[in-house]
Amino acid sequence: MKTKNKYQDIKDYFKKKIQTGVYGVGSYLPSENEIRAQYATTRTTVRKALDELLKEGYIEKEHGRGSRVLERGKSLGLLTLKGFSGVTDYEVKTRVTQKPKLSDWDDSIDFKLTEEERRANCVFFQRVRYINKNPIVVENNWYSSKALELIPAEDFVDGSFFKTLMQKHLIEITGAEQKIRAEPSSFEIAKKLNITPNSPILNISVRFRTSRAGLNLYGNLYCNTAEHPIGNSYFR
Amino acid sequence: MKTKNKYQDIKDYFKKKIQTGVYGVGSYLPSENEIRAQYATTRTTVRKALDELLKEGYIEKEHGRGSRVLERGKSLGLLTLKGFSGVTDYEVKTRVTQKPKLSDWDDSIDFKLTEEERRANCVFFQRVRYINKNPIVVENNWYSSKALELIPAEDFVDGSFFKTLMQKHLIEITGAEQKIRAEPSSFEIAKKLNITPNSPILNISVRFRTSRAGLNLYGNLYCNTAEHPIGNSYFR
DNA sequence: AAGTGGTCTAGACCACGCG
DNA sequence: GCGTGGTCTAGACCACTTT
Image 1 (spheres, rainbow over the protein chains, first blue to last red):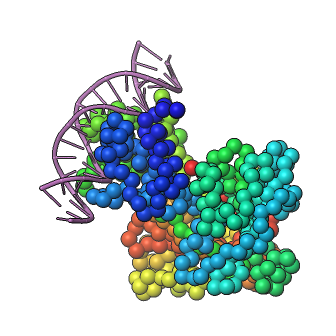
Image 2 (image 1 turned 135 degrees about the horizontal axis):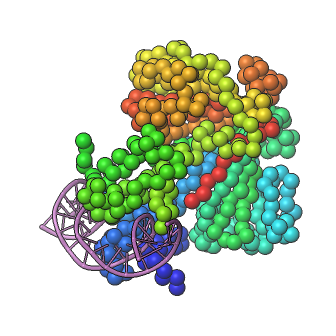
């Protein structure tokens, strides 16, 4: 294969095994010494590989125990990724209100599409997130039908689109841009969120870039923050 | 000193030199070999130290050239830190509308204060940020008067409170939590932002944790996002 | 050609977790 | 006591940038 850098090979090998679930969340990778033996190298090189997995949030290291696989291979500090999974005190549910279907691009996407995307159709789907049985977020998603097949809602891993991409298609999120604004809620959104039209609502537009060439994921979230502000935190 | 880990010593040494401007933005650190000689150690250890400075955003490395000091010692993916500095297309100005003064804690802070903070007074100040001469953000800030002296507005480095903390007091931001919501604008804020009361406004509450024991910085931002959404991006 | 960072080897000793 | 990860040494060779 590539075999350019030994540490890259080791890193890629374990990253893939983690993404595909061969090493599940909470399980331990082989010890540094075992990996060293398998790859006929030194611990320095093995550690370089593991350091990168650590930095990227795939594993954590426990002195005296080993390297444990972490939840979610990714921890971009993004509202859209971290937002509601952190709210563990509440009962959070997701309902797919529009199953993935072929569609035209929507004007509400406020990023500039690429040439290829504009020439293609897109796949659209909509989900509503509930906290304690109250609808809190309406989330619209789009992606180019040329870059990725239509994935039926039934195939979502644990109901998560991102997990599906990672585990079944080995596609990673490599970056994202988002725009946030406060705006009056439209009729349509107000109805879905059980609020009065024109009351203030938080709108997040996001574009995820992925490891698959030509594939961007576009999202538009409408959040009722009256009861539940969007929270996130950052540490180093 | 501590001298527990050699790589920590090296890292701390250069971090401090960067923070205090001894190594200015754009300048180069000594080569790995020079550092190795000065500290009577090996390149492996020197590289470990530099790797951490790299990871924390203090330097970038250029193969064949050296390690260059980067802008902003920190790059938490925080709206409040990155938000408006990124908007380079526009003319951005900051006006201090309330110079730092001793005050009581305000109810609009929606984080739970520590015992020590509650027992002390606080320092309060307010700034308004303009884009193209239009007021866009009102920013309130508080911190415990017991944890840090009152810093007069005239002493702000480049008008920035954070730069002042870092360069003059060697205080680092070690983490932050924020809560974001959309809400109707109050009379008071609407007046300062030249908008009609009750129109939707973006509110960001933030608590910064710092390297100084007992010192947290609290912020409350009110943003008119009608023309300028808050944007940020994340890459790996 | 000389200097810089990037990768790698082959060891060593220490600190932590667990049985 | 044993296996784990954490730190460190003393080299080597390669790739890149500059002079």
